[in-house]
Length: 419
Image (cartoon, rainbow, N blue to C red; front, side, top):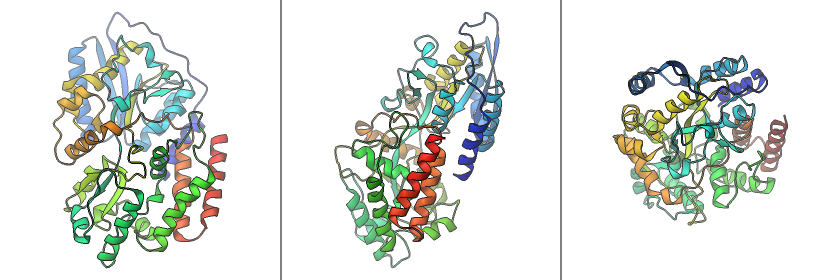
């Protein structure tokens, strides 16, 4: 997260003025598109195979790909965009979307919808996820949602019923307490959920609120944050959850993959990482909610694709995005490497196995309660998230009180949003 925040800050400093739009007319002759994305060598091999297929189907378009690891990618993207040398097509992260769109460096893909880009088959919860104000500046290629990954054996050993739709936050806290006590301290019921503001977000959404409002402000007040922090402080004081110092000590590993906790709330695609790191059988369950009719969940784009406003080939660029989100053969090639595919056609074409199959089944089981994704977060959201993590840790260590934690967070958030 510290690296993410540093990159976000660097992007803000490097950006120059808004870019001008590229042409909308396709050239009659062959064109070359530059396409940049983040990932590793394994992903690169799959992406190149998909590009080869695209070029076979579109012989007048040549695609030149490039990739870096996440941090290096955004450092280069900030520099290239500021210098007017952005690639035609670029991979986009939801946390950066508003930052780039509001600076005018992304092309409005609404100009290509119904022509070279079809977004009609996107999963219901992902439709419109790339919109900022009145424009469409990115299209999701994959998505995930919040969930609860847990060990059924740990629940059975403690005599606690496995989580199911309808369980509440009090049920969750009670389950953690029973598991911790029954293990004699060898395993904790869970981590302290106040350590991430996505747990606050899901609680807010269950109440019909948002983490950030449409106009980029905080969607909650100080008393609501105090209530959330108090829940976690009580868990920490009662020694029900993994001690914060232990969680910090084991980084970058996760407590669940080390069998230190019975379950944890997080993005459902983490199931694959956890399953690969432990021999313990794991399952995916729903998040707790005090409002059974509203889980507060949505499909979050795990990554998106955008077109540069400087591109001379917006039509061909849109065709490339259309291929990557809609073509069943492309979906079969890429599988779940970039997350569970964002369209129905590609999900049907992908053969999902093991933890990925579990993720897909989980999302299918709750799809009736998945809501529209929230608006793209405001500029500085990464900095605010980092502040939340730091303040929460200080609270769990006992170095500051709940009231001090709340005041500190709101002060830092206000400074960031106003900068």
